[in-house]
Length: 187
Image (cartoon, rainbow, N blue to C red; front, side):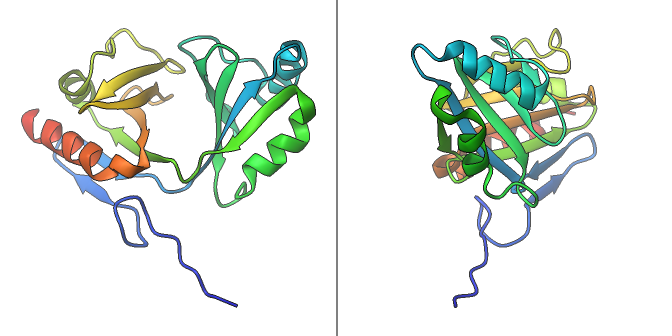
């Protein structure tokens, strides 16, 4: 049997953490992700399964910050579901069982990189990165945006100084570079 070790999106086994006086940027490799898309004619059943899982169906521009599973709206009848990888490594399989024929579920853990940005300068950093209205966003708001020419999602977390950014894993280095450059530019 092989002894395989997971590698973070930026390389290595440990999460990448960049700390500044006013902000911390942490690569979060601890998320299991799966997309859920309602199948035509099964939207109501898909919504019912989402309500059972998250307590409510995430509306456009919104995330449900539920524990342990959380989710956000990606498009019409499409959502991304996330949970701790440690306890939900097979999240997509579990969701396929819960949704049955009501939705198409696709494993997404290896497709996205996640960065948690926390600190009092987070709004300033965010304004340098993208066009989301960060100062008007509240916990549970989720916006699709472009960061460094990459399609990303920005999710406002419960802590008012915390955002979570999901971007394409294949461009993790470029996204990280954009985050670090923006962090250096805020005082």
